[in-house]
Length: 224
Ligand code: HEC
Image (cartoon, rainbow, N blue to C red):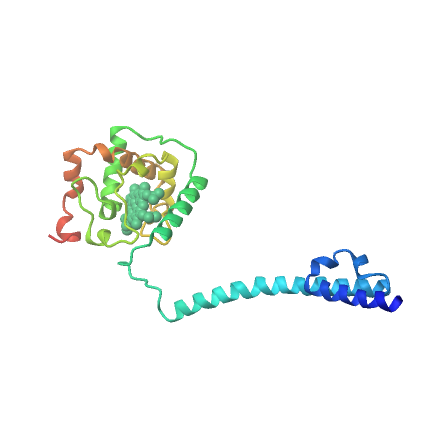
């Protein structure tokens, strides 16, 4: 009878090795093995499966990193600025960008909005922005046309609906890995707020203002 139950226990152990959940209760192993041995077996089973999980967690990412390394090493990743981002990359980047700007932007409304402030903003816009972003009837320069990601038309609705603080943050800090520069090291905060005032004014830009923006830049920066 004792022998029989020992065989039964061996079978239980065998099963438990292959279906380790069954060993959750050490009593299942039976009581013919000394208690300490049962616990040792249980611990060994547990640590084996823990090792398997850990190995999986290390090997999986290592395979992915290796595959990525091969793609980069063979030069398969196309770094050309003419190679536009795919739908997925563009969506993920826009999602990350919107949330990052939203989180960091000051919760402030623009303290500058007079016609003089807008005029000062126009002068700064001409010097610092128009070559990339252009304006109505004012083309971007050649290098502005070749940017990837492209510099958006600042009269688009997604820019119009950005709060003042977010526009201020973007102009101050720029956007890394795009052509959008940070202006905080060359401009005071008042100057940046005035640029924001002009960006707000862009949809209603007058013929006069368009002429000021266009003056003197044709031969320098754009092809005929
Ligand atoms: C050298 C080119 C360049 C110049 C100069 C430049 N920008 Fe940009 N700007 C970009 C690019 C490229 C983007 C698009 C970035 C992206 O897709 O994430 C951008 C994006 C923006 C955005 C939109 C941010 C968003 O949420 O996507 C605003 C607003 C903006 N620029 C304002 C300005 C203003 C104002 C100036 C001048 C003070 C300026 N930019 C100067 C290239 C430029």
